[in-house]
Image 1 (cartoon, rainbow, N blue to C red):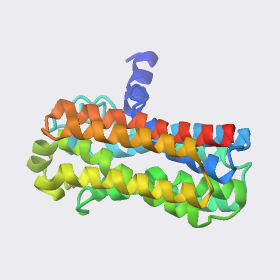
Image 2: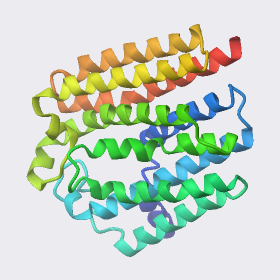
Image 3: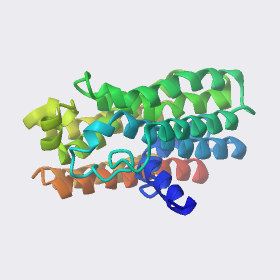
Length: 287
């Protein structure tokens, strides 16, 4: 195998060809950075968190595929992944995940001690999430913590502390992750039953669509509450309004539980996160 072919496999293993995960991880981190800095974050910190998001999401994907390598071979959508197909070894995957994590840690060295301390649970969350699908009824909640941990880290980078608003934003992200990853899990429901993996789609059962919509509502209400606490105005509310409209559109996609439409709804969550961020940026910029 040539070097170019090997790098192509690593790219697929890190899911760099499918950036939706990076975006779903990035939006809540940017929410936190803009809130904590009153719309004027330090650009060095922004770039550190953007690059760190790419590296940690990539590492998380590698660890996820390592943990699920035996399951993935039995699922139609994942059986061609490099580890499941046997084109990359388990040892290679672990070394790649370790290298990506080390690079992410090097990025935060210019920041304060609290950020470095928080990086330890952040790494633990990313590494342990794939295994929660064996025993947690709603592993998507754990994913929400892992995907949202950039929020307290962003506050720590700017303030040297993690106030209540950071934890409220993290909780909002947990509800959002349950919503979008349940849509994702609705795609694999039959395969997950067959291989014995636990997901929110199976736990919610026939109430899955209602649960998704309630989680969207909780996300937007918590974001509105944080915005109110921070004195945000019309533009932020407009961003939340657009996000709410997107959530309603997702209902039209998932209510029939068609696999392709559920997956489309999952991918479309990028625009929900972007709408919230755009409203936040405009609110600080135009007021």
